[in-house]
Length: 462
Ligand SMILES: Cc1cc2nc3c(=O)[nH]c(=O)nc-3n(C[C@H](O)[C@H](O)[C@H](O)COP(=O)(O)OP(=O)(O)OC[C@H]3O[C@@H](n4cnc5c(N)ncnc54)[C@H](O)[C@@H]3O)c2cc1C
Image (tube, rainbow, N blue to C red; front, side, top):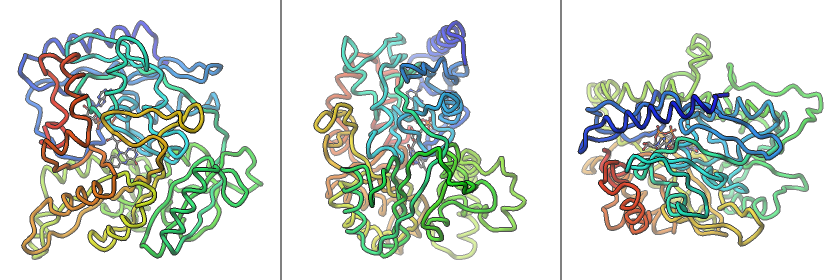
């Protein structure tokens, strides 16, 4: 745990490095990891020093809360809470996603059908604003406008330096049922039932996500926390076995809670295949400590820089490829339509499915809305995630497939998260992502617009 005095010094260091950025020059975090996917313009000024803001300040077991620094990774956060039998209400699947990143850039996981998104269990947060001040924002009080607008602002309003979050009790294992569906409507009916009753076939459900391999073959993974292993040894997907493949092979499974939380990180869902890491021979020699999403992410960044694969494709006479890396939220009652459209038009598989409903802390009807990512309270959604590339068809342009996805998502009443490529024009973007609210809050907390704007970050790749 970090001492509070060290925290104060780290914040002072951050403020000094912010003051040192010349006016008019872009402000960037100097951070070792990132889970952003869009390429960005290279920084020309030194980044903000956040090196002292990567830890957990304290866990209050009785109150079930934690005080956490803004750039603490979920990997370190979980390491600090699990020994207390507690975990954050939503733990994004990739180990190096930070708490501040998930709150400002949105995150989602298999507890989201009952706990909503990571920002919905934040009790208060300290923010270094664009004006260079530290303010503490809470749901009520003088900075409630910043608290509401921070989620999905992607660091355009300020940087979170400390967050107090709620925690939930957890057991040592997760017992899983992999339920197969051959009709998408049957799958979405099952999601509706589990979301409403938090049970399936008479057994409780604490966690729910799923994978579609094709419209005729999809799985819901329904899990409950337990201390009782039934003397079955838990599975291990950090070695030769690969988690996503197990869904087709097994109807039941057991994982330690720790391994469950990071089940998708080892093979970056299924994307490690692109680096050969799922080939049995390569896998045997690929060091286990390098089977992690941040290692794959670094490889992708290298590829962005040097475009080796693209050059080999051109040399072999293959068409150029368009990157299609997106997570979209589709209303549950339109999810089957979207998945069929996606399979037909884009054709990438597998696809990750993660049901979601804004958190209702005091029962039905108690959800609040978040202006920069306006999901409708009380409505069920499914996050559909797909990460890969498709060949650019003759006569088509790079970006066409992503644009078609944006149109389809909007037509179905959905939303797209902004960590990857986006093509909206400014008017549409403002309508979809609370542009009026963002501008009002921006003018208050960053009057000189020193921090890069949301549209400039999300669409113009700055
Ligand atoms: C392939 C892929 C799959 C993904 N899948 C999931 C998923 O399944 N579940 C999920 O939850 N999320 C997922 N994400 C999205 C991820 O949660 C967001 O991109 C998140 O913002 C990343 O957090 P980070 O800490 O890595 O932030 P970075 O990538 O470092 O930064 C993201 C943005 O947030 C800003 N930022 C970072 N820290 C702070 C802070 N403390 N205060 C204010 N602004 C800050 C940065 O300026 C930047 O604009 C996925 C992303 C990718 C690329």
